[in-house]
Length: 405
Image (spheres, rainbow, N blue to C red):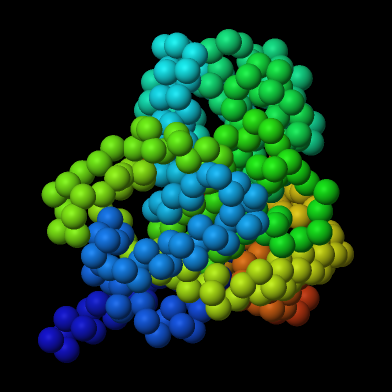
């Protein structure tokens, strides 16, 4: 047994610390009450919530919280395994409704070029034509291009509130106007900013009460909602859609259930942890977190620019930034040696490759000090640490060696 345990411990130690994974949005902060009681939910299936009354209570907490934030009192809230499932469901319900109400048998939807890859993938899985909408010089959805591509078979126009790659926010009002003119729906992908924007003072219109044709919206729980991994929310304006198109199964141990979500097997840890977070932190807690993200972002931008790096800040309220510059590939390699998990990529609509830095709860101090110190060591050509200078000489100054086979 000790040999097996030591082997498992050795395997686990091959991973870098998730606390230094600055490229992912997955939460690293854990509510102390979640840590204390998570073992009560390790072997519970969310689909059996009729048998586990606590899951129903946590879902009610989540439902009330989201309806207050996003103002859709006559709608419904579906807890999912994450935004991919939420998107799949939103597109499915939109397709079914469009077929029955408008007789649309060859549906299409407008999805911006900078959308997360899961959106066009879900549409294609449902045999919905994807019409890609171009992005502007600001890397946001080109509203005029959307206007050109919408037609009588368009069942949804997708807008993004906080893009994955660059943190931009689309002109949601402009997209909603096009949806209204063509009597179709708007869907907002708020996987990232859905737990940030509502807690800051902004002029962004994102609520159902502000956007007449907003049909649905997805938000991730395991990002800035701070839940354990595998949690998302789908908000639907009209609960009658779910009542009509959700199917039922009757063989569960807890009895018959109307399946408004897709997954039959789904961990209860998501709904437990998000419900617990909402009860523990409340609106004021999330407001304080959002302010910390923005303050950290400002300090990071100032520090990185001072060190000579170019930064794309994205939307003012996005909890992320994008570092680029001549030596960004080498910077990424150096940061990896220092234990920082990230990589360089080419963002859609942006001419430079770079690396993303996500500002998460629990990472603020580490980013402002340890991360900036490491970037400074690289940027200053090793004036503080001789081994950094040696590394840069080896990787940047020395010409590449060609190996002949």
